[in-house]
Amino acid sequence: MKRFDAETGNARVAAVESLLADDHTLNEAARRVAQVAARFADAVDRDARFPTEAVDAMREERLLGALVPIELGGRGASLAAVAAACRIIGQACSSAAMIYAMHQTQVASIVDHALSSDWHRRFAEQLAEREWLLASATSEEEVGGNLRNSRCAIEADGDMFTLAKLAPTISYGAQGDAILVTARRDRDAPAAEQVLVTLLKENATLTRRSGWDTFGMRGTCSEGFALDARGYCEQIFPVPFAQIAERTMVPTSHILWAAVWTGIANDAFLRAHQFFRAQMQKQGGALPPSGRRIADALALLQAMQARIDGALRLHEHSASRSWSATMAQAAEINTLKTYVSTTALEVVKHATMICGMASYKNGTPYTLGRHIRDLHSAPLMISNDRIEANTANLLLALRPATLEREI
Image 1 (cartoon, helix red, strand yellow):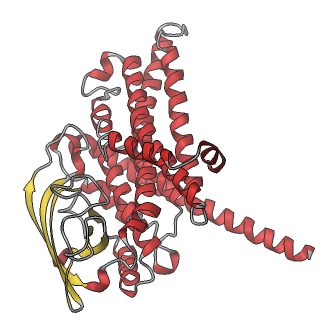
Image 2 (cartoon, helix red, strand yellow; image 1 turned 45 degrees about the vertical axis):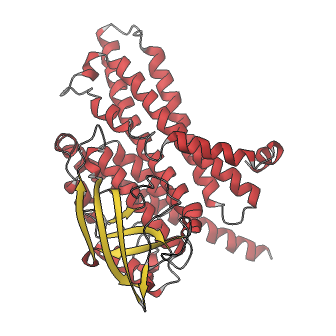
Image 3 (cartoon, one colour; image 1 turned 135 degrees about the horizontal axis):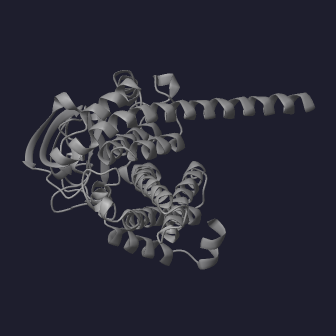
């Protein structure tokens, strides 16, 4: 019995060491991508263009298929490793990092919910082999950003279907190799009875209806399109979208978005820290008046990362949770998004006050205009007001003692 325990323990240690090594390899690849992304970040922002160079670097480093299981040709990376990659790239180029985060949310949805389908297993293999970029169309005209309702519907005819959708935004839709789209199961289904379908680029027509000249996150190219597509019914996910959204899409997107925002805020902090040290040297080692702010900014960054780490642990063990624990987890994921999206802005505000006019001017080593503008998108990506109202409704369904016990 002791020998069996020792062997089991050694196997577990080996598995953990292998996972840590793989995560380290992914982080190193993300750093190489970040170096490329940083060189073009200002041009991407200025010209509101797709970060082609950064995404090409992701393909070269085989980052797009990171979440695809090893047996299907991917890296089999953990969500924590992908979140770390989002943070690393976020320090260099907000738009490139957000594109990576949104892409990986779609990959996670396929890996968690569609690999029982032969079509989607083949798709995942091709995604990993060719390093395809996945876009998504979940918003819709007259529905807006309400993820859980659709107006458009699948029109099935035998083993084929057609779909038409008016999407006010499809991030990097023109550049994606495939698009995951929400729709009603059929034209008689209610708005909340949705499915998720994977559309191949060659079988979808995108007619541009609006541009993307925005305050921040200018490189995500989230233009509006009329989408018309056809395909095989086996391209429809085998489980309802409600299950996909609850178990994977919402928690994964909020975790990865939060990682991107933390990366942006961390870069602002590093610039402020560099300025702070230079200021101390000029003053002969005397602590500048901004000393309190640099400490406050660090504390906020640490709190943001702690919230992400906690959400990752919670998500990792979510499959076997009770109903009350699931509701508590949903509240935790919701508040992760609202907390990090607002706190990241607070970090950049501190950094701006530390650097002063050097941060306000463009073209200095301490410029923070892009950081501020990009982070103002954070509370709007699924409105914090909508999320907070949803969280309040979740809390109404939970007894305080139950909430405390489950969290």
